[in-house]
Image (tube, rainbow, N blue to C red; front, side, top):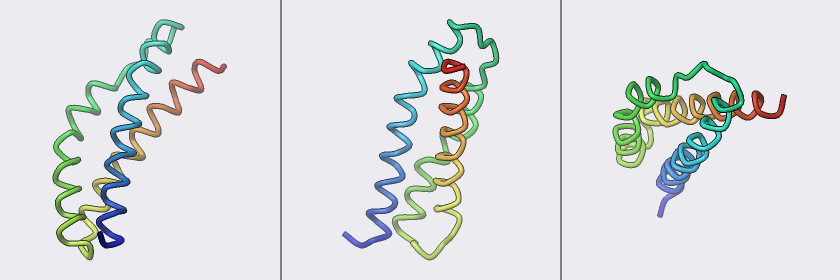
Length: 90
């Protein structure tokens, strides 16, 4: 595999991991009193960006759109997980 293909697969694996972590962490944060929930809205809005970003990044590594889609999704998931974690740890 080439380096861009490995990077694209790694970003998709990170997206899957963050998605798996955000579910239980978000539920625990809401149980602890955080009523602000945008998870469903974010998933509906950016879910189509995952396969499109992956295909573009894998097939055309020089095209920045695929990498920007994947990076945006990772950053949005990190924001959600970080917010829930901060709420629970506070």
